[in-house]
Image (cartoon, rainbow, N blue to C red; front, side, top):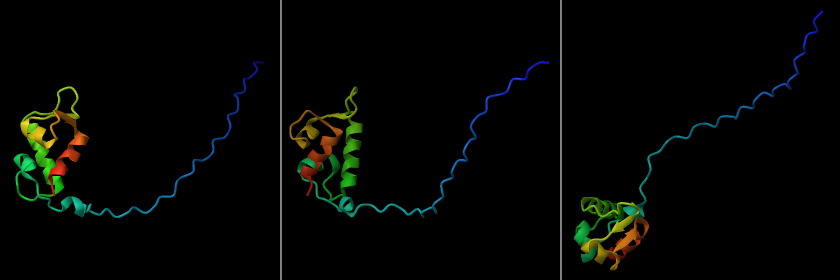
Length: 112
């Protein structure tokens, strides 16, 4: 008679605990931050790039980026770097290039 091999017993799997589902929150539309939406007056240096009418900070940044893209002022290798032309050099305090993050700091020194 052939002896039957007994399979090694595996420990019993524990039942996975299901996380209790929380009721879904209602989605509400994002409210814009009132401080960013308050119009600010650009000075003459900033007005050369974005226009001279009072605008919210968000619009000033959008128009600055339109200007940068139009004149291809982003650095080819390091896309975070902005190479200034004559108008932007005056805006950036005489610096030939700044990072995207520094750009905001320099721009809003020219808005009140």
